[in-house]
Image 1 (cartoon, rainbow, N blue to C red):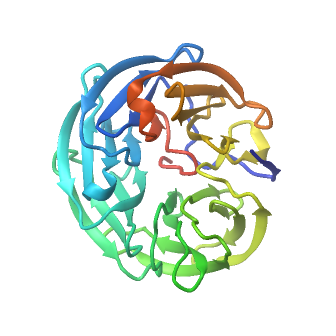
Image 2 (cartoon, rainbow, N blue to C red):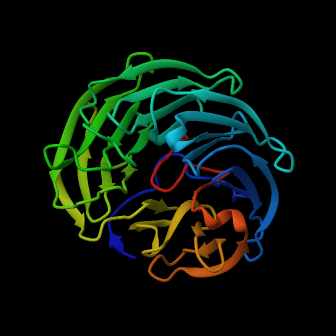
Length: 331
């Protein structure tokens, strides 16, 4: 775990209310968990779907969760308006495996990054039962994007996109994309970072929108770059041990950011920034969802947990107030 001092502000879209639910993608289902009481999380319901523990985003506007299915090359939209009786709205075939998701909740636009070639796609999800493709950006410049990451600066209509696996020339890459018109996405600039990592399969991007700084992480390294409307500035090291699966800025803690790592096998996947809480999924004995107080990120405190055999296949989790660790999906 690392806590790195920075003069940062919370990205636009911090929650003004606590999370009440966390949704967890497992190998064969989506599980809703009541986290109103962090000391006693409770399973609400489970809907069967071949999710293969894919990544997911939550649309407060549409009361839906959108999940990728990894190698099945699908996006599944699930109606969670009644968490006790969730239902699949659509299973949509997509042209490749999605390595990252991000959602412009106001604009009803879902962005996803294709793993085998790094193409960036935009989809209209205003009707979760009839999702339609809008655009493909093939010039984003990533040779591959295994477990890549997308973070949105909605105020300036920009997306920051990171590759999560070493590209063929031995670099990780960050791209700045104009998303002012989701039907005509344009790559504006990129920045590369040399690496000696053999498997840079973990990647996140977090934004300090106020100060126009992007933090992008891999399994071992964290780098910071300034960015303007059209360009990415020179990068500098922001940590040697990477940010594993999570980066987040916390409300009322503008002097620090937290990499989300409790231990090497226990990574916070989503946050409740109103209560300064984080949630992880543990694969072991037992298999469980854990709730942490991270008001002091240097010393997270376990508050409560929920055991469930479905958590044996480590999936992903999303709270019902904001995006996953390291992304900001709402204005």
